[in-house]
Length: 105
Picture (tube, rainbow, N blue to C red):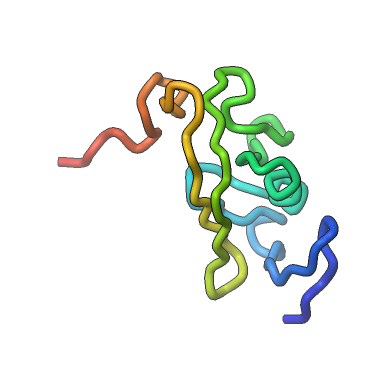
């Protein structure tokens, strides 16, 4: 795969799968614009598949995710965001600290 210029930087991300989306391992999906916005602002921004639009996590609640590091997987089709939780730290819309708060028995 050849690098290409994307939103002001060279990248190898493979947007050809999942209709132009890549999983963002933090609980969301990103398209090319969401990843570029995340890099530009320093805050996790995702693509809402239901709304068909970008959204910054915590933009209304104040519980934003400040990006410390972005890692790319070996297939160039998934990113892992290392973040710092801002606000009260509860980032799930249910008020839980994380969206992953239930364990299967």
